[in-house]
Image 1 (cartoon, rainbow, N blue to C red):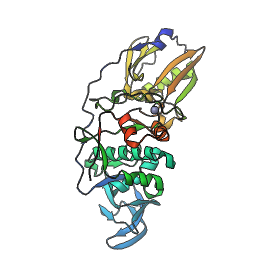
Image 2: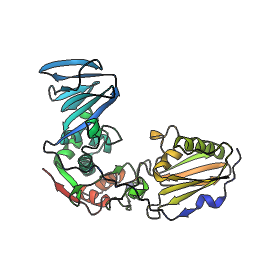
Image 3: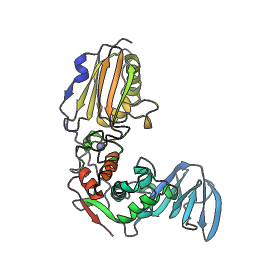
Image 4: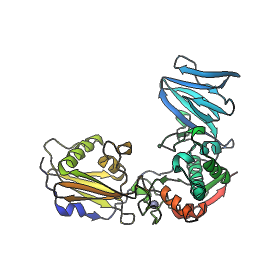
Length: 374
Ligand SMILES: [Zn+2]
């Protein structure tokens, strides 16, 4: 396939287009009195191995299949329950949903956070504990803001990147436990509601506006801010080099995947990147063929340009430019993740430079208030 790409098209930067959609925060709830969260550990399987106390009897390595009656409840033995060999604090509820088993960990919010913070911020040293404290507050706030979001399925949060990565007791570390305990009950608020405390690995020098990643009404505290702290991240700058042929073949395949069907006889002539001027992120890609134009919205861009082998098949971020050199296409990018809210590599470097967790949080979440809820 021979494709001519006008040079100007690569460099075209247009003003951002306001995207108006649904409100972005449908899940905000008041904290529950019992301070428990319900976390889906295992989703949609036909068997699961658990151990713990059930009906006052200890069950060791008990394999549950769909033949049994549901829901089933397991309490902790020696403080923990075990699911497929991994230990968790709190109890278990096993439900049948659409003829599959789902395992839900019913756990105190603070204990849940001990299994989240080390998975989300990674290893921290004594010197970096303020970053872990900032992560603990962000994760606690996120959990509270999302209570009840999957109430029709009987839980609040997935234990994966879909919400927050949670690996129970097995993931806990002394320093991150200290970070959770020393900020116990502290939550970020905006106008008396827990905020949408989004966070990501590396912003690449400037965080994203909310609408660079999602549609909906942008919360005022999720605005792009300068970040001078994440240069040491391995994802601060990156690039991808492909031949033009590889690039356009891939583009056509990915367009099909996101349900943009380009006719067999259509040739991609060029495309335009529409950028948010403040954050520099790509907000829209317009693919121009010899017959038509296709607009790819912001939330599809990382899927469109991601390749097999990329994390979750997504391009690392939408903070990039595309250049051509002879027969090559080069995507030059910055950062890793959606870019909204707290930059985790930035938080770690701020801690290295003796900033407190309060300073870290107020840098990335502007005009919010930190309050202790219990
Ligand atoms: Zn950053």
